[in-house]
Length: 70
Image (cartoon, rainbow, N blue to C red; front, side):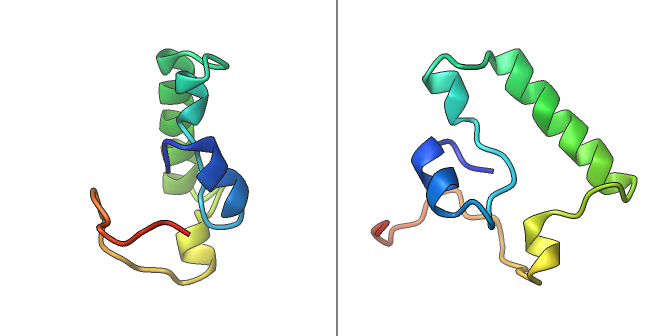
């Protein structure tokens, strides 16, 4: 998940959900929350596989990345 639509567009095959639509007012917080909740349910039930599992990415969650985004 990310909070910038530009990042989701750039890494479309690595990021499952973008919450950037809340900032651009295309979606409400409730709609994005439901999208995240439904995605978690689908992953837990085996309906969907997140990109991290598809590509075998297993990194720790990074709240702040000091490296510049290119």
